Image (tube, rainbow, N blue to C red; front, side, top):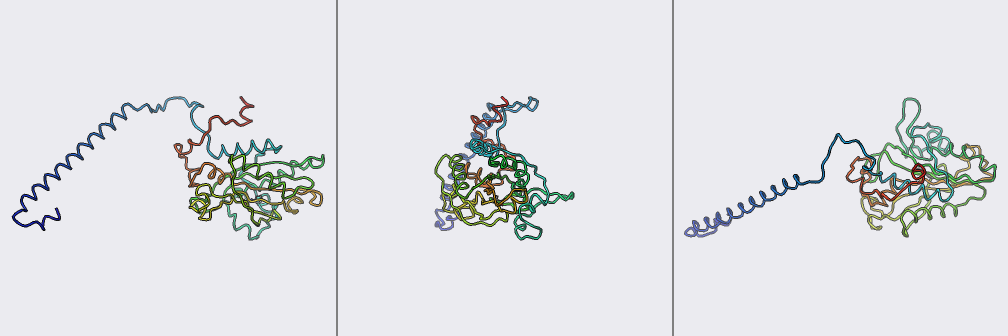
Length: 317
Ligand code: PHE
């Protein structure tokens, strides 16, 4: 139509007619196709096998496990097979357990990293699963007296005052692990971490260990795993670094052992804080951490492996 003005006057009429004819033809064709699609859509709705009856009783056959539950259970199974106890701990705790007992006194700068939600009862939402270390160490202290190690893992939901984006959440899951005995060293720590990760991923994964500071371990490390989403090239999920911090760890600080009534001269131990949410992201190649708390059943249900059973469940059965 725009070109019409360049057509010599004597041909304008004919050209205009031709263009209008073509336009009409195209418009009709589109309208026809649209009507056809609409019809098919209606047909599909009528024939749809998917129907929903809200009066139906809830059946246990429906629904699926949350991907974090799946990863948690998988890691639990691995550690159970290595003689660890699986422990539970509350989401609400206090300043002593979350910080003081972990060698993080009031006003220590390490607290800045773990701002949380404080309750009016002088309690707080735990910022890390390490908050249970004191309680669990005390619970199993008698093991040491009878010549046995303390071996425990404790998964849990943690909370931090975070700005939410593709890789940060204010609510996430960790799994803490501790082992204390005579002569426990960094090599024990590395062995358990490697065994666990190769089991979870069922393939060789690239990890790196670098120094990391946490007041409750000495020495402390960051165990990073190569980002499986971009293969180490760098993407939004790994903040363009190619690596994801997965498992901070280290040798339990003597002050932490002392706070639990264990003699650090006699016993040593390691602790790790596995990022369960991170691990689920890596394992299932979830690009955005916000999916986990989204309640988006369509997305969340696709990870369930129905053949998977937890030892606790098969016991019940
Ligand atoms: N609790 C630490 C955190 O969440 C992680 C950690 C656990 C570090 C155990 C060392 C040993 O940041």
